[in-house]
Length: 118
Image 1: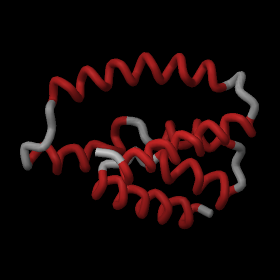
Image 2: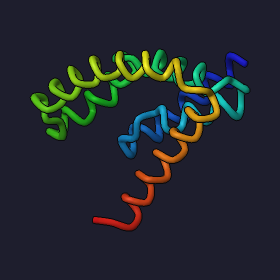
Image 3: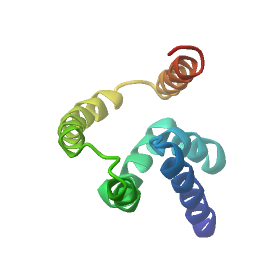
């Protein structure tokens, strides 16, 4: 299981570094399907794995090429920090099935927007 998790994290990290996706988009479904975690546990585990140090090297590569707006990144981080807290508190009261549906619908909506609209 340890090697599978290291490999999974490595592959998701590569994909995330290439396209800038939050690893949770891939990590949460992988933890649910491959490991059999509940939606709540998968989301919490994903958040734990994606804390600041994980993105540091990918961020540095983008920064070296001038592809980071530091001011906006800091503002987003502050908003995400506070919003993440309240979102996580609220999520604890949503049944697992509905949380999974909300997650899936969110992925479909974002995917449709990226595929079909400018």
